[in-house]
Amino acid sequence: MARKAKRDRTIEQQLAHGPVDLPFLALVLLLTAIGLIMVLSASYASAMYNLDPAVNTGGDPYHYFKRQFLFAVLGIGALFVMSRIDYQQLRWLSVFALGGSIVLLILVFTPLGRSAGDSDVRRWINLFGIRFQPSEVAKVGIILYFAARLSKRDSQMGPPKKWNRRTLVGRMGERLERIGLLELVPYVVILAVVLALLYKEPHMSGMILITVAAASVLFASGIGLHWFVAGGTLMVGALAFLITQTKYMTARINSWLDPLSDLSGDGYQLWQSQIAIGSGGLLGVGLGNSRQKYLFLPEEHNDCIFAIVCEELGMVGACVVMALFALLIIRGYWLAIHARDRFGTLLIVGIVTLLAAQTFLNIGVATGAIPTTGISLPFFSYGGTALAIQLAEMGIVLSVSRQIAAPKAE
Image (cartoon, rainbow, N blue to C red; front, side, top):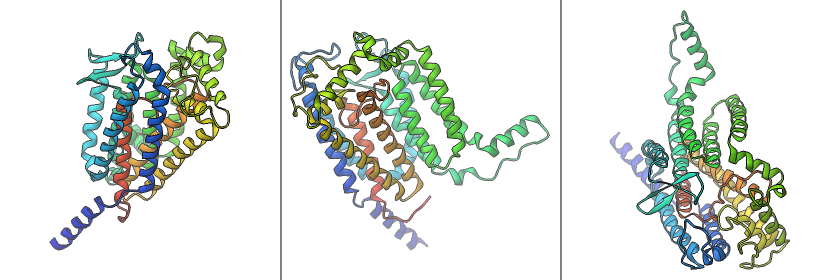
């Protein structure tokens, strides 16, 4: 018996240090490299003219690129560290990840919180000289916790609870348990707390992404489809209510429907983004030759960097970039299907779905297909901590891929 246990532990150790999935790793590194090149090209002018009052570039045209490159190196280091860690260790760390992310979201409303320029929107905190959005950490925390809990769903459900059918509460409890509502209550409560904190910032794009990530993990775990129909209907209704009751969101919707009606306000960014995309044509104006980045297109190295990609690399270059993202997402889901256990599957589904949603929404905003949401493009948009966290997430996926040769387990 002891010999068998020792042999099993040896096999576990060998699998935990197996080869990573090279196609997935190559796609991540390639997208990161292209993203760094585009940050250098897109941010050159705004850094040189020091346009952002919250950032002192000192007139250095390479300011944003150097910071992004530094965090890319740190992020790639985090990727390889995470890929070497047995992802099973993330089960017990998931509680601390979720709790820590909630604490960070609360700190936004303390003196540590920071706003964007003169805006009343507070989405950042400054810890030890590092400025970042706690919502980036919350995305990971939600995925880890939901995946860890739901991976043990079948073993933790146990026999149905015995309710006293003579009382109204007992009959209602039995009914709610039968339809699966009681099982969802802890996840709904946790998600509601995180979303409420994001709403107070306000951070609508963060709310959308966290909801999508949480829903993907719940769906992959086998939660009934009818709950997603009901939840989706509720979310659409809540979103419609928030849009009508939140002034800045209402303005964004109106400017999206008719950007020419507000070219001095919210419609300006969308209009300039579309000009950049149209100027690129089929083959683009050439890498580094964008005209819109010269003080015309706001957030050219951040939320609107895809418009610069289209302008400089043309439709062909933009399609290549989108194809690389598509291959990465498809490969990620392939790894999820072939993961060793349910925990690995749920981890990859949550991370890859988050990546897919963020990519789709950013490109949709840049092209005017959907209203402005303020969502960045993974691996491309400027933001050091966000890039480092994204690369660390890719490291988790690679950690799961190391054990893909193992037999399926719960």
